[in-house]
Each structure stands twice: as C-alpha cells, then as structure tokens.
Length: 74
Image (cartoon, rainbow, N blue to C red):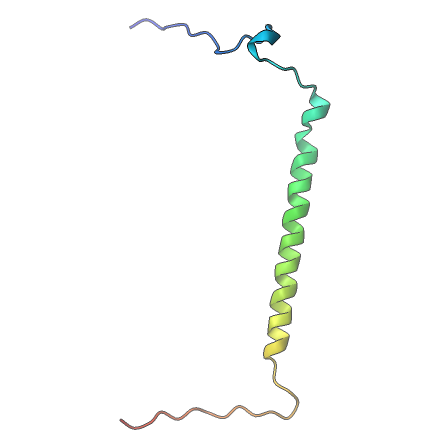
C-alpha cells in the first residue's frame, strides 16, 4: 500500500484560513511552568501547615493521662 499525502486542515500561510501567528514572547512556557510550580508549592505548604495545626490540636495538655480501654465481656 502506498503512502497517502494529507494536507493540513488550515494553511499556515493563509491568515484567512484561521492561522494566527503568536510570537514566542507571548507563549513563554518557562514562565508558565514556573507559575505552576509556585502554585503547587503554595498548596503543599498550606497542606503541611494544616497538618501541623491538626497535630497540635491532638496533643495532650500537660498532666493529662491516657487510660486504657477495657473490652466488655460478651
């Protein structure tokens, strides 16, 4: 079977076909990925702070005792 040549759906040189040139400055992926990493860092720090706060809420007061639970005889 021979290879079939397909044409792109939009012409890259015909702006009437819907092609819009975007300069590289407008699509700076490094800045976008850096922003995503900053957002993930903020989310991770917030989760860590929430976990620390929850742990502190569970800590016993000074002088408190933990008593063992006894199972009832059935």
